[in-house]
Length: 183
Image 1: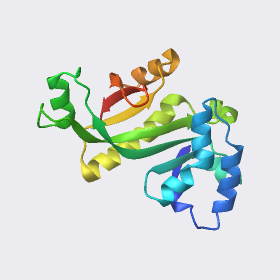
Image 2 (image 1 turned 90 degrees about the vertical axis):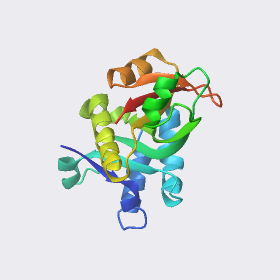
Image 3 (image 1 turned 180 degrees about the horizontal axis):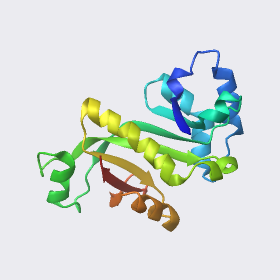
Image 4 (image 1 turned 180 degrees about the vertical axis):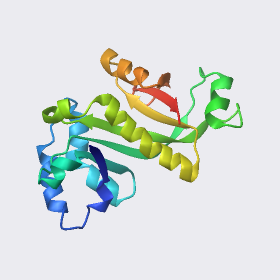
């Protein structure tokens, strides 16, 4: 069975070195996603910039296999609406007003699977684990939508669309597609 562990629960414990070794074994097709986990995730965690969740097989873990199958990172972002966004869509995302220029929104900052473990976890399973955490956040603090940003690559966009995300706009700072999903 797939389980998640927040990286924050590992930082500063006796398990940290074992997990660092497992992270160093993590290999992902998207090298930016791999780089984040290996080089930034701990620092972002310590500075409360985001929360990273490691995905593993809990049965294998009990047998001593500390392999990381996948991970995702969640945070908050200030979403600035571009002029082309309809007033109705703005009101739907905000929940009150169609006149706001932006909103605070939950962000899936990273989402990646290990190349070595792709048969063990599907993208759909990974998204379900991620959305489960976002539902918990929603229950605790509210929020209506989740945002993700991705490159305009058909396979990636199709994956997100098949997981109920819709195109919103192109981010003006880095030209990534911004896609949203109602929580």
